[in-house]
Length: 537
Image (cartoon, rainbow, N blue to C red):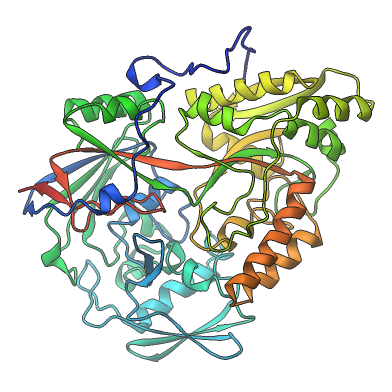
């Protein structure tokens, strides 16, 4: 789709919410829902029934090796178990592994004991050979998006049917966290042999539910898995994921009862759902972030050597500072998101144990921003092209940024495109400034490596600085939490000086549910788990 330009708003009162109408757009939201609200709902549930779940987008291929979407991870959470998972406290726990890994003194040998008595959803035995086959596919297949996740792994060895050893090129502390995501999903070797590169068309894993069918752009159907090792815990007969992109339609379908669960409610619809007596809202997420990526050196693609980008912001760190100082993160959160996200200027969550206490964010300073613009000698207004996904909320955010920075001497033109197109522009470097985010990982390495280190696949800014790269690499080899936090702080402070990414907030996810549904698990990764879910008895 060709990008299109969005005209500036003539008058945009920043103290008011201008997205949508009705109860959901009030500037005074109900009390923010809590993560605990979902996990604490342990009402008895009856056996049977079909749970209709609205997804906000159509996932890409349901192949753990190549999937890159958050909505894909939502489906995998109930179909493809991993070696490890997180719990309600975001602590890493065993899933298909029998225990946390045993790591050698030098950190280069990682031994994983596996759960026994497990079968895949096609009846194939789960064992060390199956684990090796999946991990080798993740890390060596040329099409795999997991290669970077497992880059430190040089060899996977079957020790015995219930044990594998991973040999690493260097100590890599985030490995367990990587194995708690798609890089740790184990696929049926029988299905892999039969389907090859087309595994995602009919995926088979270990999980409480098995893949039953998919209609592109419409729905994905999962059925209760008879072969699941803990099948007695699973009450639902079926999950139907319905693709409903429009947030207002998702909310309306919740209210009508056409769906029982709606993912990623827009912050403008949260209050309207909360005030419905038949519905409840719980929150998850907080690991990821959203922000403004400024192209500082991505001339030929994010994985290529940085080059010269001929835009005013790319050429001037002072103008990037001025651009940031023109922004008011708190007001953006209130104006665009009804105060339901967590404003911040760093990629590691505010409550992370890896977050150094001395990381602070600049407040809006319009006077200083104007001084920096004037001192730059660049004629004003300074042209900036901001690329935004074309949904209403992102366009609203773009317009607020447009108005805030205008006061400092910038002339921001907003260009919109389909979400996937904006990612393609980001990877290829064909942009000036870009709105984009990251769903987040429980280990901070997953929010930094590949995102701000040199030639990282998701380093759309093209930043390349030893002051960023070296501490992040050192932190990955370090096991002491305090030392890792200090190293990450050093890297993030350097990145904050360069300003290739202006982080705006940590993304909270809001899950709307019928009060007839209980037993849903919803954690900081924002992935609804339905293994114990059902309809209240």
